[in-house]
Figure (cartoon, rainbow, N blue to C red):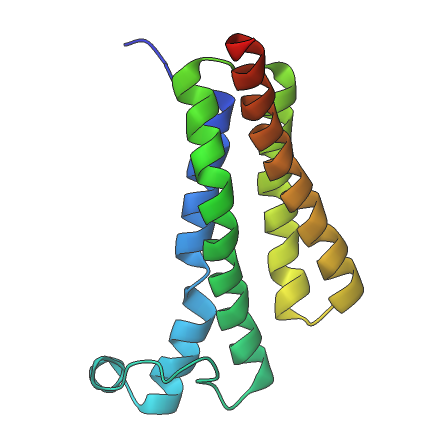
Length: 143
């Protein structure tokens, strides 16, 4: 079996797994606060501030932020893969995106604002690198 997984797809898959597991802290919190699994199903999350404790709210917001981030990263990573235009630089940008997002999670959980924001920008810059890679290749082909 031939491996057609590019580094961009590998790191995208890692981010999907990370995002999926980020629900764990606040899901456990809700289980305890609401009195079990059945009560969690009966009471959906109310709005943007569903938690009494700050730490639980931060874990929830970090998870929502991961969805916002992956919505930007996934399309450009997929375009790089589908177009076959991946380079060492796009692979590195994808790895930087994942690792910065992984570092971002505990910084958000433990409320470390300045460093958290700096790391957020690292992931954004990595995503924008992929986007500009695609854009410039498109413009070069069109010329």
